[in-house]
Image 1 (cartoon, rainbow, N blue to C red):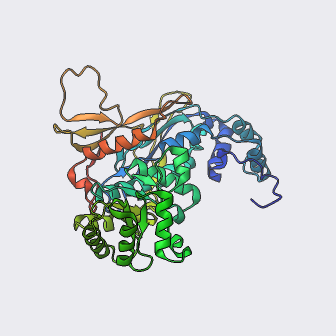
Image 2 (cartoon, one colour; image 1 turned 30 degrees about the horizontal axis):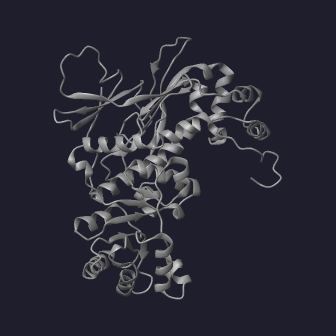
Image 3 (cartoon, rainbow, N blue to C red; image 1 turned 90 degrees about the vertical axis):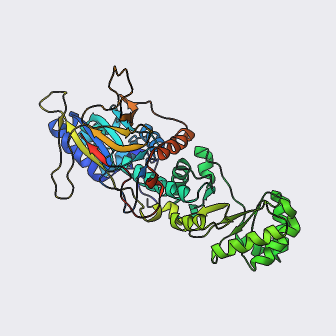
Length: 447
């Protein structure tokens, strides 16, 4: 905001929204529809091309942002001064607190086209202003987590370091590190993600560190002295074979790892592995970085290239070609004529229709516990009481309550989401874990 602007004081989270959310509230307050009970749902009409599943991420960030979603004096002064709101809207926003209830897929869960990832039940005015906040968080975090999950699968058990902070907005970098960790990345280079979310951090040195010293030997010496033998030495600043010889000469067989960041990494890695083994450093690991995505990782892992870890930056923070999850937030039910009962509403727009009615969702599982369908229903599914015998197929409920009458009840530790994703991914059919072209791993069935 320009210096000297009269509204440039404290900025609260309420303004992390679009202008039209407040114009709708302003108009709805005029005739009372602002107080109608409504249900909004957030879902994806389709997955990005070639994706077999999506990964839910951002729930924890959304709940924190919801708790802080307020309109302070400076916000209201700005909105009145620019004509966005009138006196009645200002009175509403002054005391704004979300007072409704929210259900959602648990963080780390997989989703498919039509999955009601978030279900918001509240007055129209309370719920509509959350649209931009929810979409901005979930669209980015789900996109990153979905890409990260494919990369973890492609790595076949080798750890991946998230290192995309220099390739995106500084706050997006923190969100990306969090989402990647949920999807199975081992560590992040981003220290803020370590502080805010407890994501393990890792990092050694860049080419600049080698270049600032008089020679490579001097750089390696001081790094080993400062960080110990378990450090990772960057060996491709000058001549790779010479660097590997120097590294082993200085550190001995206990050298932790070497990093390759350029060139034909497959060929270089094979040569480095052979050289390390010949020098007696068979336990020294090889880490590869440099414009990797799930396809490059899969090629290296599938070809048996001796790589023990990967570092991914640009492809991760941009969703590996799908920087948004293309989620939408749509009104699907509302009350009318003073009745609290909900009636379905739906769009009939060409190419963008919606299915009316508040939804419930469950994952259909066969006798082996493998997912066979995503079941989306207008009545609760998977929670029928009184079942004495296990029924096949089994319906595993997917929606859990996140907010109850304005109170956040669904917050959880980040590691819970990380473990959940492992379980959810293992539940999908084997073809879901391929990175080649293909559609959703299971169909979505509407009841």
